[in-house]
Length: 388
Image (cartoon, rainbow, N blue to C red; front, side, top):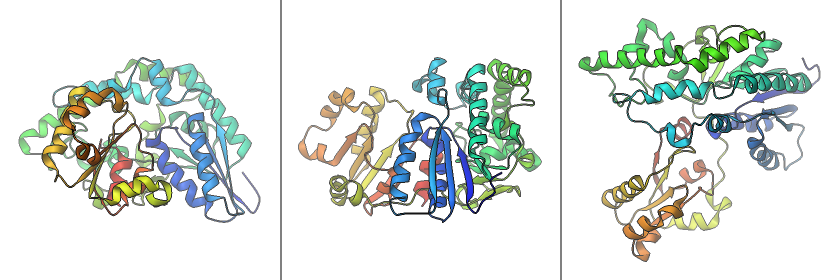
């Protein structure tokens, strides 16, 4: 452990925004404090965001510091693509009609090949030894990093960016996991009507069956065990046996639940907001003109032509003609024919700003006085940011 006047904290996270955003917000908070040596270990895809954060916060001389460490290997998204899992494969029907979502889930949590997984574990151990932290903060779903810190026996806590219910799991009292909380992706209402409780139990059992019988899970567990990493995958550890867990959830934003003592609920964890006018004056001027709906469906969502047509028709039908829409539509030029058909006039096109990528952090856009609603894919970051 480090033995000096500075506190050394090492954050280890996946590079995907859904997992890294809360980590970066925690990093920013620590950098605002004196005598803190902060390290972030992740895949190369996150390095630019960390560098930008460092430049913005440490532009004024400070006794704190931020260093990025590259974890060698492929990030989760790349690993999934290498296994033939594409973004469009993640789209599924409600689980009341198809169990595809449950079958895919095991592939996502075991994204890497056995060899790549072990390489990430060993490389993470090297970073831990080099930084010698007083404490590590680990992305809850980054299993290789959790194996690394437990293997070295250093103190750590977990950061979970999603709902508290996701990590309490089967630890809910009175088996509530099965009958009280709707199965994810099911669309079942809450409270669940009595006549649909058995359907919910059936879906929960099917979800567990899909995971526990998945070949990729058993293969990775056996490979880890054969290389001295014993037990099941870290994310399977019951919350009551886990270390401290940081969550952006609060009881008012979720279904009713019993909070375990080691689960810390802090509410939405986001980076400090920079006003849109400071980041993109042109976008700010466009937003100033009228009440606006922001639509952003997450990194992995891919649209079909039918969906683009349905979204445009929905907005044109449901919204007041004076309202505007800022829509993140990846590869929007490939849908230009549909856009021109449904938005034929200059005034129509002025109402809709359709872009491949939102040029400003979505949270900054949401804080603009004219943004009245967010349409999103149900991701935890979007949900908690909108709640603020």
